[in-house]
Image (cartoon, rainbow, N blue to C red):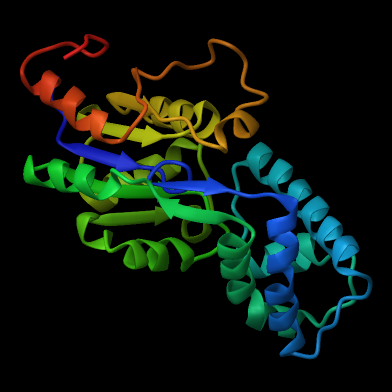
Length: 259
């Protein structure tokens, strides 16, 4: 087996992601402040507003996962998140990307995994092509976060569901990343934190290897996965383990064997 490309999921994989209700309540004023810039004031207390936004967004997630479609930010906010409120569509459309960015960065606490940078450097030194495939409602968050972490230089492609209009596990988004990075599925490994999106999607797209690294998000995302639906080739506890595994494969060891 030859592997020349390693593509990564973002949230839960390159970075650790956490959230809880109190943290989201603390972040809600940022969203409300963005809306207020256009004179949009949502009625009710913070708790009630948060519950409504989360409920409608959960409905959107169910729909998007069922259809495989990622709507543009304006549609997510107008047709789903703010559906219960009387808002001006033109104003919301102007604010939509800022709202989505605030949602992704305020409603989720993000921190780069401690071994991410050294892993990416090790893979680059070995000549692997690297990229990112991420499901995200924002069109700017992943780019800005990679820059903040100082690791954007490692990736020759960043493919987002919000830009492609399709989301993992649809094979088309994995195929789009292959075109962007200039690689073949049969020589590409994918690293993610879910069976439901990452392992199933990369396997459907014909990727040679699937690595699973569990995160805070894994159990929730995989709650409805049928046992045996798909299995990763490797389950790793840290990103640096990927380098060790790939070194073993280059040395002639078969997938699943311990280097």
